[in-house]
Structure formats: structure tokens, C-alpha cells
Image (cartoon, rainbow, N blue to C red; front, side, top):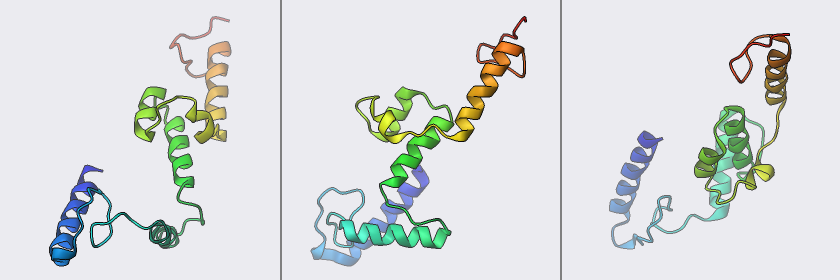
Length: 130
């Protein structure tokens, strides 16, 4: 991510030099070719183009936030860390953005099975005694 942001900074410097006196430095990390706030329609256009190029189903840009939150849940990222990544000030946002997926349910079932019947490993690291 750091490498991508650095690449973006270099591209933005080139845009600033090209725009010269027309550049309006409003402090945006992601700006248009003149330094202004991105237009939501332009952002949506580029998002749709990226989805098409990647061969991914059509989705709203906001849907990517739901996907990101759910992936963090699937990876077992702590609530505190998820809040930091997603920019949430309240953990209750998880119920709005994260979905309990089939792989998560399967993992829970495997853990319960391991805990109760000694199948695989349990979350406590102890095998069931019977």
C-alpha cells in the first residue's frame, strides 16, 4: 500500500507541474488533474471501468467497504484493528458492514467440533477429553 501511495504522490506531482498556475492545492490526497476534490461521478466512472477490466461483477463503490469489512472478519482481524482500518469510531458498525459467510460458519463448526469431540484443534489449544 505504501508503494502504491508513493507512486500516486509522484503522479500527482507530475499533474501539479503540468497544471502550473491552474493547480488548486486544496490538500486532497486524491484529487483531479487541477488539485480539486474528485467529482463523485468521475470516481464512479473509474470504479466501473476497474471492475470491468478486472472481470469482476458490477457493484457500487460503497459495496467495496462491505467486502473489505467482511474479509477482515474472515481473516480473524481483531475488532479494534478492524475499527482502525475501516475508520469506525464505534464497534457497532461491524453489524452493518460485516457478513457472516459460509467459510466463517464452517470454521466455527470445526472449532466447536474440535472442542467437543477432539476433532482437529480447538480455540483453547486443548483436546477434548471425552
